[in-house]
Length: 157
Image (cartoon, rainbow, N blue to C red; front, side, top):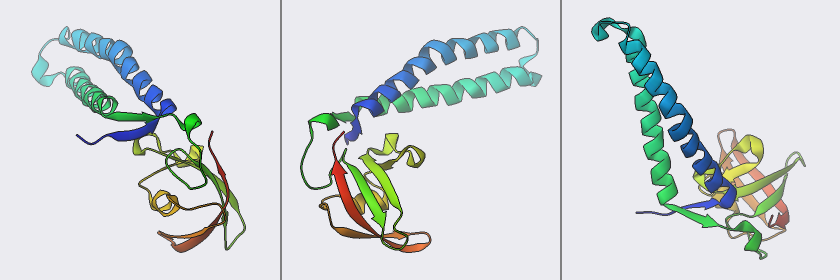
């Protein structure tokens, strides 16, 4: 069973979603199924079939969350330090073509969110950054072609 690296915040988010799905969504869906059963013939009852489909999707997500939580390897980023990029590092990059600055935190796959500035350790950029030091240049293949970045800052927050 392969461990899944994640930050404490990522782990807490998975736990919160699991609790919500078990304590809020599950009872709500059961209520919908109960109400739909009261409408008569189940063979032609669209509400019943929709509620059962929703139940199936919810239970599938619950199982997925339980699996991820059981395999989680929580890494406390606040206790990390060093001068090379590793899991949990917050890296400030400068695009070598446009001089545009971007700040990324290297996180696990389950908590990656580009809009929030978190990229997966398994993403092309994440893989390119791992093991590099401040001042290093990295080249990443993107859908638009190769991009060059320079690491200008490395933090642990």
